[in-house]
Image (cartoon, rainbow, N blue to C red; front, top):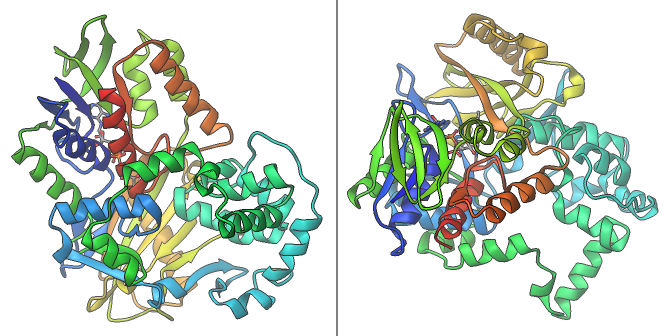
Length: 481
Ligand SMILES: Cc1cc2nc3c(=O)[nH]c(=O)nc-3n(C[C@H](O)[C@H](O)[C@H](O)COP(=O)(O)OP(=O)(O)OC[C@H]3O[C@@H](n4cnc5c(N)ncnc54)[C@H](O)[C@@H]3O)c2cc1C
C-alpha cells in the first residue's frame, strides 16, 4: 500500500501519476484539513467574480509547462481554459512601482537600447558591464548579489528584487541565484561571464556539438518526465500562449484531479492528519489522528517543515535539514471595483523592497480573466510580513493597508464593492542560498538509510504549479525504484 500525505495540488498529482503506474496498487491519500486543494482556493464574490486566494495563472513555458498541459488534457479541462498569448496586454505590460510612479518593464527590442526610467543606463550596455566584471568562483550566492556583480545595482534592486517578490514573496538578498538564474550563474562559473557563456552555448548548439551533454541532470530528468506533447501542449506552443487559468477559478484543477483519482480507486480521506512516521524494516507505521496505520511506502507532498515534525523522533538529522528550509507568510486581499477603474491593461505591478512598502505587488486579475468589474489581488508581507504587520495582524488592518495603497498607486477614487482577506501562514518555501546542496543532502540521507519515502511539493525543486506537478511525477518514479 502507498500512502500519499497532503491533498494539495502536489499530493493529488502524485495520486494521479501513482494510479497510472501499474507497479503501484492500493493508494491512500491523507489530507489533514477538511478540503482538498491546499493553497489553491477560488472563492466567488457576491457578483460572481472569482477571488483567487492563492495561485491564479500558470505559465506554459518549458517542459514543466508542457507537462501540466498534458495533465489538463487528460483531465478534460480544455473547455475551461482561458489563455493569454504573447500579444496580450498581460504579456506586454508588466509594471514596477518606484518613486511614486508606475514604470512599464521594457518589452521590445527597442526598449533594450533606451534608458528606461528604472535604470541608470540602457539594458544593452550591460553586455559590457558583464564582460568587464571579474569572474568570482562560488558554489552559490544570493540572486541579488549575482545580478549586482554582473549587471549592476539598479537591475538587482529595481528588476530582480521585485520579480523575486512576485515569484516567491522572498528577499532577493537571501534567495539562491539557482532559484531563477541557474543557467546564467553556470555561464559565469564555466566561461567567466554571462555573455561569453551564452555565446559559447549558442555556438555549441549551432555546430550541434553534443547538445545533450551540456544539459544538467535535472534537465534530463525533466525531459524524460514530460516527453510527449498533448494536442493542447502543441496548440499552446503554436499559438504562443504564455499563461493560462481556468473558468470558475484554478481550484477546478485539484477538484478535477480528485474526481479522476477517486474514480480510479484512490482512497482520498480528508480530516486525516498524519502526526508521526516510523520506518520499520518491512513496513511504515503512521500515526493518523492518534490511530496507528501501516503501509509499504510514503509519498510526502507536505511542506518540508511539516514533514520535519513527523520524522523528528526517528530521524532527527533529516528532520533538522527539512526544518531549515524557511517559509514566508503572505497577506492576500482580493478587491472588486465596479466597472473598469484601471489606468491601463496589464498583468499588474510589483514593488521593489527598497520602496519600504508593505505591499509586494498587485495582480490585475480582470485583465487576464475579463468580466464586468475590476478584480485585483493585493499580495503583502512575504519576507517582510512581521516587519510590517507583526505576528498577528487583524484582517481589518490588512484590508485597510491593501485598499489605501492600491487606491493611491492606481489613483482609484471609488471604494471596492467586495473584498476577501486571508493570511496564508508559511505558504511559500524559500529556496535560499545553499538550498540545492541541502536538498541533495536530504535525498542522500533518504537513499543511504533506504527509507521508502519520496518527496514532492514546493519545498524542493521549484515553487510554481508546474514545478510541483512535475515533482509529484518524479516522486512516484522515485518511490517505485
Ligand atoms: C499566494 C500564493 C500565490 C501563488 N501564485 C501562484 C501562481 O500564480 N502560479 C503558480 O504557478 N504558482 C503560484 N503559487 C504557488 C503554488 O500555489 C504552490 O506551489 C502550490 O499550490 C503548492 O501545492 P502543494 O500541494 O505542494 O502544497 P499545499 O498546497 O501546501 O498542500 C499541502 C497539503 O498538505 C496538507 N497537510 C499538511 N500537513 C499535513 C499532515 N500532517 N497530514 C496530512 N496532510 C497535511 C495541507 O493541509 C495541504 O492541503 C502561489 C502560492 C501562493 C501561496
